[in-house]
Amino acid sequence: MTAILQLDGLSKAFGAITVADDLTYDLAAGEALGIIGPNGAGKTTMFNLITGTLPSDGGRILFQGQDVTRHAAAKRCRAGMARSFQVPQPFSGLSVFENAMIAATQAAGLRGRVAEGKCLEVLEQTALLDKANKTAGSLTLLDRKRLELTRALCANPKLLMLDEIAGGLTEAECVSLIQTIKDIHATGVSIIWIEHVVHALLAVVDRLIVIDFGRKIAEGEPAAIMASPEVQEIYLGIEADA
Image (cartoon, rainbow, N blue to C red; front, side):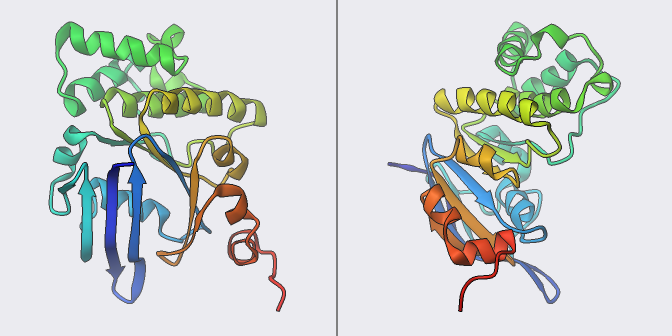
């Protein structure tokens, strides 16, 4: 399959602390890729590098075959990259619909009724249509997570990056959100999903990558990766046999 995203030797350090160490992998168009690793492994930093909110020290980022390594974040967003944040950051005093409209107009460049139509379509997809006129600050955690997803989707992405979107949810809430993400994936959107709720990832992703200290340490079929003694030791704290 054609790669929509390629990381080629991506590196980043803050002084003596390396947060991205020769990261190299491809994401096929339409694929869902899961990323796991312990806290501080460099997962969110990787998203910051991909989206351009943080400049890399070395390596290349190719998106749809184009080198975007030096492109500004806004240009990457307009090209089809969008992300959610680990901590939802809506405009709390604005309505759910107004939050969606900001993403549709500013990120996707849509206008007028086209933008409104896009927002209504996405709000239905993310199960927030009945809350369109509620203020974002009044939402439950699950609905704030759904609003994060809404704002990313209103940017009209070809690549959707999710940063621990299931974190803090109850089991029932998590199941509901998983189904929404499955439905989004079924439309053909490519997904990279960072998550500590591993069963959520395993329900959606086609492939799993494990990152530790900014370096990729394992990659492959999700069940096989989770069964790896090295992964269990690093990520789950289960000591591998000598």
